Amino acid sequence: MKFHITTMGCQMNVGDGDWLTRSLVSQGFTPALEDQAEIFILFTCSVRDKPEQKVASELGRIADRHGGNPRAFVAVGGCTAQQIGTALWRRFPMVRLVFGTDGLAGAPRALARIVDEPGLRLSLLDFTETYPEREQTWPEDRLPPKAFVSIMQGCDNFCAYCIVPFVRGRQKSRSLPAVVAEVRELAARGVREVTLLGQNVNSYGLDAAGDGTRFAALLDAVAAVPGIARIRFTTSHPKDLSDDVIARFADLPQLCPALHLPVQSGSDAVLARMGRGYDTAAYLRLVEKLRRARPDVSLTTDLIVGFPGETDADFRLTLDLVRAVGFDSGFSFMYCDRPGTASERLEPKVAQDVKSARLAALQTLLDARLTAALAAQVGMVTEVLIEGKSRRDGPDGPSWQGRDPGGRIVNMALPGTADATGSLVRARIRQAKKHSLIGEAEADHD
Ligand code: SAM
Ligand code: SF4
Ligand code: F3S
View (cartoon, rainbow, N blue to C red):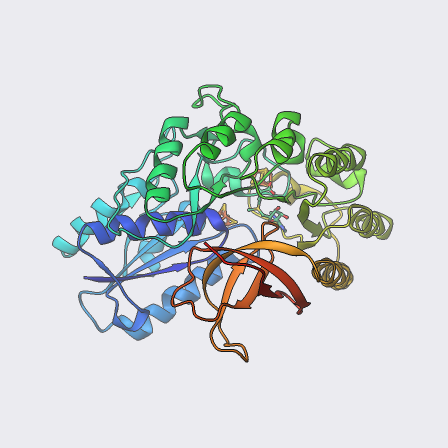
């Protein structure tokens, strides 16, 4: 049977969707475009803005287009599925499987049963005590050059605004041997770059499920896997970013000079109410240490505007901090209340029009930062990991797209190359576009 996966939300969902695809393919299912599919799998996100409505509208759309096919059904996974649970069944008859993040490991078996037993509905919503290790199957000999690797599940931080600890459960670290074994399998199939994933990777190993292995030791173990040329990780919490991890930016050549370090606000009063556990001075000290370890490190961040009680003066401090750090880019969000979180009860709420104006001002500043960061690359020689063909060809024929170690997109022509995917190419940056760079090959690529 053919299946189609739609993913909302963060990279955790993308990584979970990649695993489910592999697992289903090895059971004999076939990935397909939505029009040809009969099993529709949604990975949902609860972090902001009316997720229940988004899920409802997507389910309504699938029912309109595919409800006439008696074999067709829907599986809903991810954070909103965990939040709404089996209430989804009552409103949407096509939904026959609901699974939370810890239930994902059992989803392939559940899907196979549902296909065989018409009328069966299943839910996998319990949280587990330890990392729910998933069976690893490798139906393909060759994989794309980049892959996500989950190293932990859940989060213990309970930042005042955030629903993630409620929908992903407590932090549970995956064992180091399991992470390294997966990275080896990936490397054997052509993967050159891995991104280690967790809500707070810096506290890897330091939970009841972990064995005390620190994140820096995990980085060392992954860097030792032959064939892995690049390592990234996300997300980092500033309060847990330790000196030994910062030192790895100097010591491990595989560790890319790029770090997403969400700061959320530039006001110490707002950071305290968010319960983030650091102030702006501590954050700036981290930035200084990171730049000392790796002067070319590209820093990006997440920012929230309009947290309850945020004043104009608080917001100006956020703009000041963005300028002071010199982020290369960032994601900015308007605060929204999420059910059950501490800040849902915090007053005063910031008016919608004030939040919109602050978001627009912040985005203008972040866009200018991105433009400056890309322009600063022009003339530099760098190394690009080619991920595939560019969407548009260049004047000299096919153009290839990849990323530099800082994570910036680079398009370049590679005349005479049939398939450059997975190659690491030395390139000189010739031009900066709005969101990407144009490069030119410097010497032979591997
Ligand atoms: N664990 C990561 C961290 O600590 O930054 C990612 C958390 S969340 C999946 C991604 C981003 O969403 C957060 O960094 C925050 O900026 C934003 N976010 C979370 N809850 C929010 C809310 N209630 N309103 C607006 N933005 C929110
Ligand atoms: Fe949410 Fe904070 Fe955990 Fe990130 S660290 S997932 S923002 S509670
Ligand atoms: Fe969304 Fe869940 Fe990720 S709430 S951002 S999919 S952890």
